[in-house]
Length: 46
Image 1 (tube, rainbow, N blue to C red):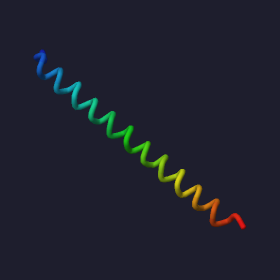
Image 2: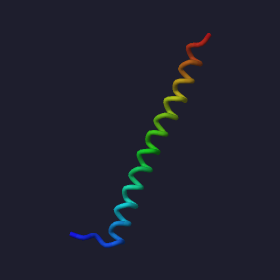
Image 3: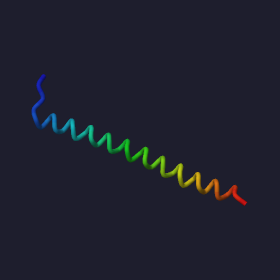
């Protein structure tokens, strides 16, 4: 089964979208951890 150029471009585009989604997810988790961590430190610091 041979893929046409447009099919290959579509597959590449989809995989790029998945990669961007994972990058966004990990960046969001890291940001939430940083914000919650600083709030936790501020709460426990006299």
